[in-house]
Length: 382
Ligand code: ATP
Ligand code: MG
Image 1: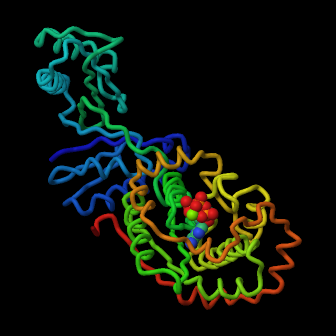
Image 2: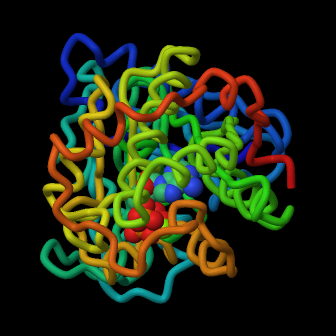
Image 3: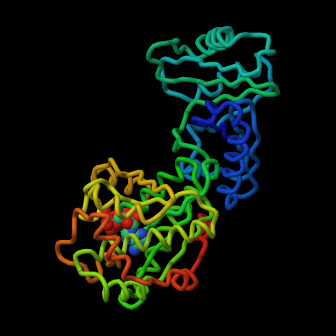
């Protein structure tokens, strides 16, 4: 059975919470790999061991928040002879002229220190392969991890996503348009350990069915990182009609977005979520000046997290490509936010004007929420 040794990122720093983070990561790994046959995840002193029947899905492991790195390892009994023999076998399969042995010993009852293991195994490998030891620029590194009941040896360390296990930072509601930015913002919160519920507003009178398909594809893509992902599709057309009747074109975008925040707060209440997430980036477009963000975010009492606030568009696009949402986001569609909006919308919304406009509106938010379509997407569905 192939075994992967998984190392986690900041979890080790979290003191008393460590066991909680380990449990969460172990559970997430088991869930995410469920589609790939029987998988067992065991905790082993600062690392996790993932064992599976068929070949484990290396790509899936690379997408799981909380994994710093992992390696496919060979396991041997706790015995210097067995360890040295396996190290030799690993070295013999390689062209490299120089090598080093790097031992970590998490169980101090093993009779030799890490340095002694390095030296003894290194001597043996050098003697029997003719390769030379280089501690500064080895072409090959053989890693040995000594635990209490067995040892693991491997050559290649695969970098993981980093971050924290999904679920350990609480639940949030991400407002996701079909654009490039908001799916990236949702991803960043997943990577920070949040369980993210996606929320999209659409104008049912102007939008074709394509929008639903696009959002479903985004949700499915994001499910590759957090697992089961819930998507709320809330009809916004009726509310927009009310807003258009009462609010001049110049201010509509701001009122739309404030209304979205209030609806999102309602969804957060239903879902027990603690914050809202947007894809805003400071001053990127008219709705994202400091003045406008102020009047938009003031519409809700919940904290608003905007992880892209300091990002350039190029950085966001690069990340969108990396996580696989970019190709979905660039499919043509029209966001309801720009429906019947002035060509030059207000860029410095002031709270008094907005409050006055808002006063003249009686919006039935509960009705929109009650007509939401809710669907769950999993990484293993496709
Ligand atoms: P994006 O690329 O995420 O669409 P953007 O730079 O195009 O962002 P806007 O379209 O003004 O900027 O949207 C700003 C933010 O408002 C989005 O990132 C998203 O969080 C939220 N938002 C806008 N439209 C919608 C919508 N139809 N449904 C849900 N959230 C939305
Ligand atoms: Mg947009």
